[in-house]
Amino acid sequence: MSALDKATPAKKAPEKKAPEKKAPGIRQTMSDLHIWAGLLVGWLLYAMFLTGTVAYFRDETSQWMRPELPQQTQVPDSALVAQRLVDTLSRMAPDSPQWSFSLPDDRNNVSTAFWRNPKATSGRGFEDATFDPATGAKVAARDTLGGEFFYRFHFNFHYIPVIWGRLLAGLCAMFMLVAIVSGVITHKKIFIDFFTFRWGKGQRSWLDAHNALSVFGLPFHLMITYSGLVTLMFLYMPWGSDLAFKTPVERRALTAEISAFLPPAKPTGQRAELAPMAGMVQQAQQRWGHDNISRVVVTNPGDAAAQVVVVRGDVQRATHSPQYMVFEGATGKLDRIKDKTGAAAETRGVLYALHLGRFADMPLRWLYFLVSLAGTAMVGTGLVLWTVKRRAKLPDPAKPYFGFRLVERLNIAAIAGLSIAMAGMLWANRLLPLDMAERSAWEVHSFFIVWGLSLLWAMARPAKRAWIELLWVATAALALLPLVNALTTDRPLWRSVAQGDWVFAGLELTLLALAALHAYLAVRTARHQPKTKPARKPVPAAALQASPAAPTEAAGQAL
Image (cartoon, rainbow, N blue to C red):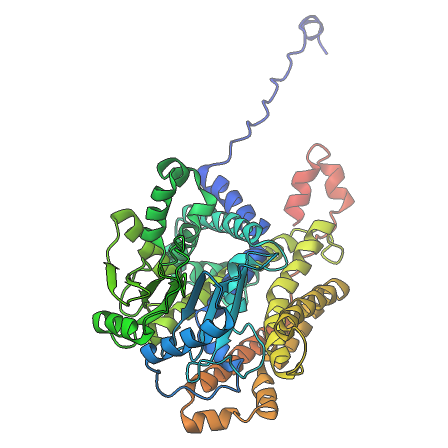
């Protein structure tokens, strides 16, 4: 080293600035929102979607669950049925201030009625029963909720107060709406991806399936989610109506716009027999069609102030806004006709009708069912994708952390376990003793008991084995239901097909198709081999010594 070098101080190397961490972009933010909005309530959303899908055939399911009632080959005259039911209710509930009963149609072979019980000391003061339209007597069939349970469960749940259930359903629907919108923003090539599917690519295949199912029914998923919120908007946002409609008169006017269930007026105390009900229903038939009367509501029966409301059905109209005729009960004189509503009420009625799909004929009903089933699969693939994506990043996939294990087991119970539970309720319908006390309640208990056992099984077994075993159990439970029906009733599948009873035959053929779908999923799951990360080659010690300042670079080159 020269003297000059010793005199000149050594220059410091310029310090490298650490790269600034970029803020996540809009797509990354939307992706995170999409993932967590879908995951946090995904299990409830899956149950809501699947039971709601089945509810599009709730009347047919109810017929299958009451095999004692004969096949309906012709819709009975609504006028005659209404008269029989009024005669029956006059004997059963003469002191009730209000009766309401449905009338049969081409999909429903029974009439359901409920009435206020002024002597009730608990509950909401209502009683209900199911009646045979041919006789007007209570149905001589097994006690069951039928398909009504799946319909109510998808927005009320069970074992919790109805209001709390509907609030929870609304919260889930809001999360679903957020997940849909953020999902569209996240996938900028979503419509191109719809035509792309790569089999056997693990995480890539799950993402392709999730994209395809999402795009296939995107308009339907948006409609069904938003309209579901609209159906209960007065519960979720009561402040607007509270502010606009303050007096009892204004509130009654609001009720008349959105419902045919008018509150009973004050009775006079003067006894008067009801005029013949058949004549009033016949006037409604002349206006709306012979088989297009859905319900009759009678207030203050037996009083001079009695009122009869005959409600139009949903055939050939895509709105749920009430249309009805009001009669003086004592004389049968037509008082007024309500067949128009304001723009706001009509908008709500159209969205309500689109959600329920009651106007749909059979081909359109099947389309509702299939697209809604695709929505169920969309939620299910999203849940599974969460675990598939993270499993590949686990330090030790054989020992995942608690949160991962919890999500994985809940996925198994929510997807495979729910199929077993729904089939289990149908098994209970056929196997529980007919004279069992609270039989319909125990059918529902069976549903939750089986679902709970599925969760325990998923917790106790290795994840892959639990998937395979529960999917095979679901396959067996669904596939054997037609056999159980053949052994316990006189309406086996082959006889239903031969006699053209497509309510029974259609439901059991659908069960067989769903069994085949679960078997396919079980086989695919059994054959699936998760890809493992390639092991890193050891870096030679000489390479590390030759470049001690950049060991990471040397290791990277060795790979």
